[in-house]
Image (cartoon, rainbow over all chains, first blue to last red; front, side, top):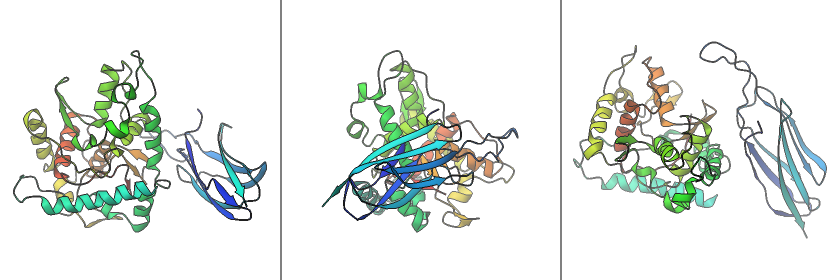
Length: 109
Length: 263
């Protein structure tokens, strides 16, 4: 199953050299694998393993996620606006299925 | 995002105004003074008001997508009949649960959606507590954000209301507690790490931190039943619908603030 929808909040444009804050939220159960259901059967682990962001082709943020991370991981990070380019957000779950979102950051002035 | 905040702010204002104008003795039902959102920490209140950080909005957005998604043999979506939800669904959640003459039953928003699906769209009704049903419910409920609750408990809805009223004050479970003993007598006091709410459902479906997910009012009712070690009824059962109607009547005048956040 493809991952559930993700949401990204960031400015559409920034000045060269400006620090931009980027917020990313994805819906995912992040099931730890340590819990049991109401019949005592273990609930299989189902987590996102990695979250990476590239900006104009270059990786600007990378994160490894573990079972301790809550459901619907919400990440805020900053980067420096260098050139007009696309930010590609990739969440990859443990089975290798990926959710990809793209946002353009225009650098002005 | 600002509009979202403003709507929440307006909701609070409406709630306060409604409080001050409720005539004494107009109804024998004691009114709940505030929504459960009032007992959230500052951080959670901020999270709830922030349209990006509030995880409940994930469901709301999926609901917006489902609203116009064609499903079923009739080849219709919600939008085919109801048009733009932002117009047509405004204030609808404030009237639910409501008696439906066609099916002769009391329906809450969830069951109304499923009723529409099976009768109008000729599609499979969603199972209770699925993301699809929660999403559509959240989307529809959010269109009434800030509107005061105003359910009709007269006429054919009256027996459900009486049943709900009786259930609310009936002791149950191994702990032998009624809803009223916590949510009326001890509302505002602490129960372990949380503050006991007045027991109103104006924020539902909510994103509950404990569940790490959105959940329906009936899931909350089941959780309460579990807490007092009572037998849990099924979500969507007549008893829970009756209770929901009674809670809605108690919440009369309180502003809807779905999707809210709860601990």
